[in-house]
Length: 241
Image (cartoon, rainbow, N blue to C red):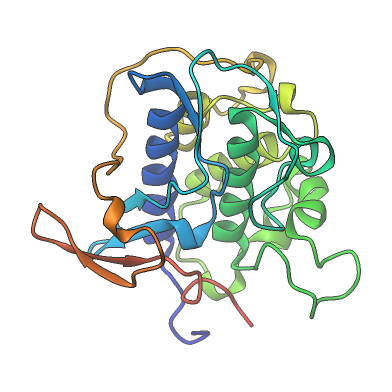
């Protein structure tokens, strides 16, 4: 796919839509906070016009009060696991925020979350990208296949959001409502306002198809009630090899 990389407008659309889906799970569900626990490209479905839908709730965990819980068995996908979850089984919605941050870095760079073919120090995307994001090293991070076909403002907003999302300390990560505002350009300098774990109720604009559980299990094509077809965002059209 080197000759036909995913356009920046599609990457931005995927980021915004997935952020709205996670915000709904964390902050707007009537039953309380739901932690997805496996946010990654394969669990994002795309419509024909790249409208993303968060899918596969097989590992989702209900946390009605936004409490910190500990798991005896860590489940998820290597490369997207938050450090505190991988090391101690501690799970809050901030683990999803970390995973989403890794997805943002993938969208920016066109790289895989884990790539053992790369040199040491570059195999784990989050660890390699963290200092570059903090320093705003856009030229070192941006997918070179994009050329000049991207919005510098949107790239900076996404880099800022990704940098905060993949913080090692979960208390320094933003909530998804804040992440969405950053991606929309409303909170370019949100670092001093990042909240500790918790959630508040906002308007219900996140697109989440909880009633469409039939696509869970890796179905590659599906037709939804709205009449449009969807497919998995596998990352193959994004990654550069």
